[in-house]
Image (cartoon, rainbow, N blue to C red; front, side, top):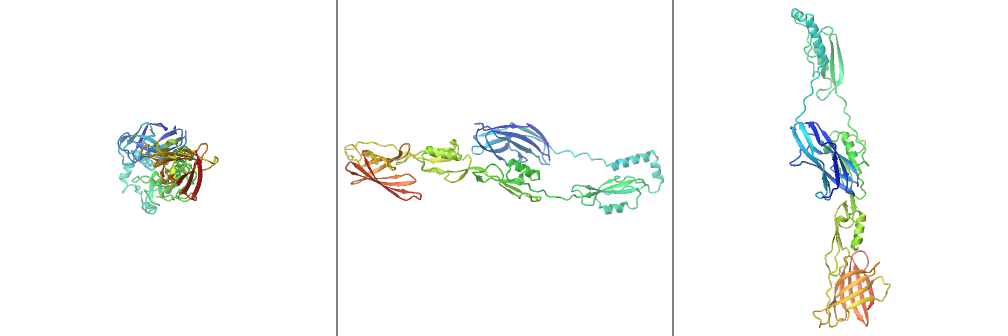
Amino acid sequence: MPEIVNISQSQTEVAVGAGQSATISFDIVNIAGRPLEIGLEVRPPEGKLPDWIGVVGDDRISLAPSETRKIEVEVAPENAAEAAEILFRLRAYETALPEENNGESAVVTAEVSAGNAPPPKKTSWGLIAGIAAAVVLLIGGGILAYLLIPGGPDKMPDLAGLQIEDAREQLDGLTYASIEEVEVTVSDDFSEGQVAGQSPEADAELTEDTEIVLEVALIPEVTNPIMPEVIGRMERDAVSRLRAIGFGRGDITIDRPLDPAANGTVTQQRPAANTEVTPGSLAKLTIPQPAIRVPDVRNRSVSDARRRLENAGFGDRMITVNTPTQNGASGRVTAQNPAPNQTVPKNSRITLTAPKAGPIRVNVCARSPYAGTWKNVDRNTRDVTRVVLTPLCPNQSQHATRYTLRMFGSCSPRDCDWGNTSARVSSNHLSAKYDQGFVVRNIQMAMQGNTLRVNMVSNYNDNRPTRTSSLQFRK
């Protein structure tokens, strides 16, 4: 298995409690010497991972040769998660050949504890003051005074959760020095205007020196975040900016259309930049995937076809050439898959079909006037330069009943071999046909003295008009 990436990591152990989260950083380096389209996944050595362990951001990246990319894996157990030890690796694989080309990190051990102990409750300064006052009263004989005074001193009522107007009514008529109301920002446990805290605490004794402080809940005005401009940014940067304003991993989707001009940056975003993001909004980014526009290599030699495909972006290993045997074949490409002008992902495979001519069976016949190699009398012709006719007969004592025809067209630096086809003998001429994919050629040949006259009609499958040629050949 060839090594295409090297994966290193910041740590091999992480501890996290239920309801918390932690991240592990990995550095992935392209060591393949060519651009890579990489898929990412988190795998356990065995069994199945919980769905709260995964790659932060998109699970597919593009890597240039020798490029290093930092990837984060988040471990975020649910509040109800049980204590456990979970093992996993980060696996990176080439999307075109996932089973052949891949790499894995070292094993990471995640120690998950079942929940967090609640923080200790802070003692209110009012309670401390109340306790201090109680100590003073005890030292000064307050207990005796409490027993002797009918009804005892006033007690501080429990005002938590009351509207401030109701709290004032309960304090009306009690003994104290002053009341101070302080607005405080609180969580959703209280409504606007409710008492969120008090000093002294409930049931504390009130005296003429007692200063009462009431904390009144103030709900802050909620402002929605503004969508940042991420068009033109690389995927990792764009996703990081969206998560910074509150989008979760599941809130961001990425569309990856094929585009030969793709460079890995965001081309479209939703919501639009500088608009308000309301709670529950989803984000969508368009990041085109690098692609290849398939060139048309039909009717070209295999070497020329390969060169054009490699220039378009196909790797040599991605090109397959089938060469079935076919009469009249010229060795040129007759079919390709994917078809011309399609747009396909980089590292896609392409298959060419380039039939080759079958072997020539040679017989010596009793009479075969057409047999031999004939050369065009026009040495500067741009058409057929040579004709080779090989006679075929049931046995050597009979006349030739048909011939194997092989023609050569004018090409540079050497003539193009059209391959073999069969020519039938009629009363005074030979008839043959070449089917070369892009053109079908109907040929008639007749002897006139020591000259072979060839009439050829070429019917093209594209927009070119039908072409007729009249040629003369001599041995």
